[in-house]
Image (cartoon, rainbow, N blue to C red; front, side, top):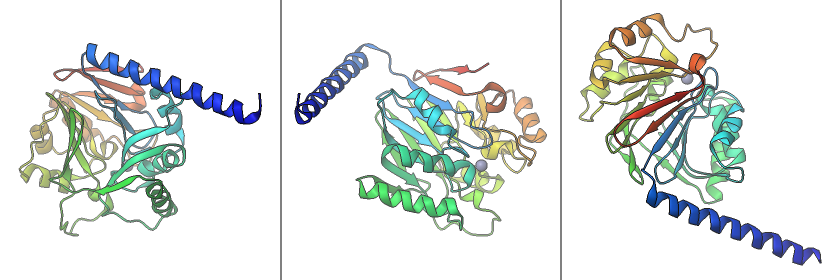
Length: 291
Ligand SMILES: [Zn+2]
């Protein structure tokens, strides 16, 4: 076989395979109960959350502090799958951004979501701008979002809870600029808080948005400057998930763990439980962890 013919054959085989996979997806989606999966990866001290909607949209919120995200994603995606529908960067600190850079280098990303507010003079932030531009040239869309906006992904929807437009700068650190999002699928609800502190929590309480959620991704790795009692009372989660690893900041803080315990909330920590997969069926959530 000439090399030209060989190539045509390979491409044809590939198309047939893709076709089969597509039909399989159509077949299963008609006969199985719709489920959404949310995986809180154990990536050490940092955040990285993978979401698969009932319609199969693949979404990554933050990427953790190093290249470990690539291994984690390969556990969730099929071998040849190099596409993500959406990446969401809560804020450009290294423990959230570095793994996003690795992801942009290795995956084709359709939509890039961030607030556009936070800017940092770091090597990672410069790379973020560079890789983002490259992805946009290849057809990705950049969408800058603020509180009050919504992103629909099939039967799942994100509501942006923070930051607010015209953000005042009386607050003292960039973490407060983190995107906080609520994710709804039928009667399932999640809130992801990035690294926000008391200031933004209070603004969310005062906003008109519904901030009740079954699952709370605890803000800022369990920092003592986040997760106020007032905020916990309003969110009233059944499960609190802390993404945390070895660190010198005292995360998660004893005060926060005590507040969660006293409120009767089940605590899961990536440093103890490993990767935490939450399966949502539209009503209840089921937790599968590495323990
Ligand atoms: Zn962080």
